[in-house]
Image (cartoon, rainbow, N blue to C red; front, side):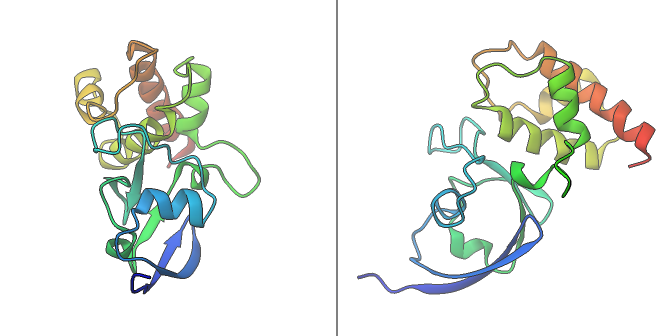
Length: 162
């Protein structure tokens, strides 16, 4: 049996301490150990972006990162975007309102990438949005409504003073 390593990570505001195998991927830790299945695994090569999470507020591919590399980090998954009362995050609401959802497989990674973008730039242009989301592949939407959703989310966040 491989040697295990103790890690402590804060996921969606909650501290988790576990013994993990050194080669356990962060995506597998989130999905199988913590039961947070919103982080999807599509390609397992870091290409599709479905597994994107925030690690210390920066977007990261959970399928390319080992759980031990996240030791001590703050991680936000799609489950951590809504507030405690279950009210959707403005980016989630904007995606819903702009019909930027189809099959949903890419959605969690898109949402996380959009949140990261809007934290850096409160009013990104359409080309900036497309560039920020270029690492998130969607086979269904054609991206137009996704770009509109991010623009709408920027308006919602501005109106909320966030």
